[in-house]
Image 1: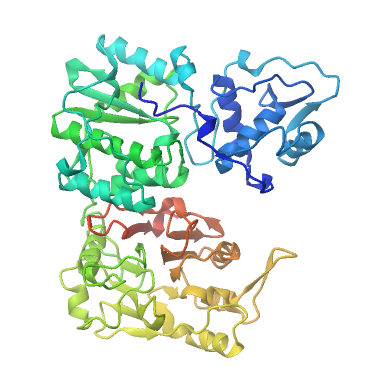
Image 2: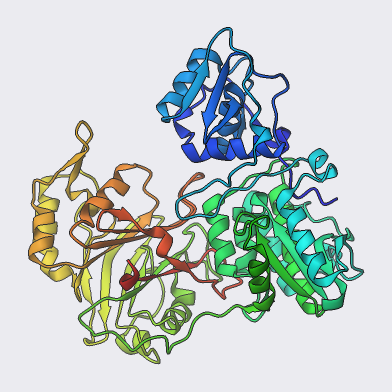
Length: 579
């Protein structure tokens, strides 16, 4: 057995003296905990006596579900005998989530929820989170989705192998890896410093194998969708034939961000082994399809049609789009924007901490995507770099790109010179200074910023850099905003469409998201992009998109960049027409 799935609570970080932060638990976490309980994947050591959760028509042991939901939300396993209480405190916890409990000191245990079939959980905009059975449950054959998929495959092909092995599917030792696998291995080593996660010579198993079709099907549960896996997917060769949508997997990895810490390097190991399967299967003439757990209900009435669609999809070649996707937009309107980010702690081969080494290639890639505007996160161009930027050097050979926004400056020692707005229709750039950074900065800088606004027009958009979004202040008591300089009124008078907001690095204060939503009202869009590397715990995505007060970051299509030497360079594309 591979052991790639299973809810092993020993994998969770054990709680310490830190008080649990129950505000991190959402209704979706409770729903996921109930699914795990229904499947038999997670059960309490002792039955509940007096407090029960009534959820979607079924009854659950309330204290156990509360602790399991906390573990799913935070990765921390609480001790139910020390870290939190059942009874009234647990009933109050679920009450705050709008859920009903049955709490009586003399209550008999309510009927078990496991007698009823579990309804699949639903998440707005995402696939359901499916159960993660433990190894003991697997041995009892209680994996309903995989069992159902197995039955459908056998009905179609008759002979289907489970946990199949192949002589060519072994983990290469570090000294025997080719350039692609070596780059992946090195990138994973650099994520957290673990170096011994790849067991050279280990034989890898595959979930399903149809010999007559040379077909492998891998069933990816939640624990496969990690940030490490995202790093691996970005390093695949552009022409590698895949039986799944790489962009869908990348998005799921960054959205779910699963963590498995037993052993500590388990996420690196699983990501590397999945990469080995994908790459070696393609090289050996096998078709490998991946199925994302929760994307299809294989027990439902439409499962046969879903299987037909899956098998008919064939290989899914990875492309970077096409230059012919649309005609070049009118020069005075921004329609398709590339957001470019990198880790500003990572130097290139010249020892520079900027984008200059890959600048031309990034611009060309964005042009292939039909982008009319390229917005670089700040610290774009090191002022110590010999040579200069020119109109012909930037736009030469590009078909769609009409404007490029970049900053000349360094992260350390912090030297911020200016931001340049390059436009195809004029030889020299418009230069802009960042006038202030914080709400508490002197008023002079804010007045200069307001006076600068006409100079900051970019087609039908407006450039607002980094901390200048602090021109208005959040009023915590009311949740409203104080806009003493009339910035939003000016946005309306100027008929601003997109606000282009390049940032130096991740801003930790939650007010920033509130402000982006506020400025995006009245049909505007706020596009923010920053560099990664500021500190541990920063956001997985280096950009946000707000439109008409709503977070639309999920509409950003992240490209699989071709820079194997700089996997930290990330490019997201926003189609404003889709907002």
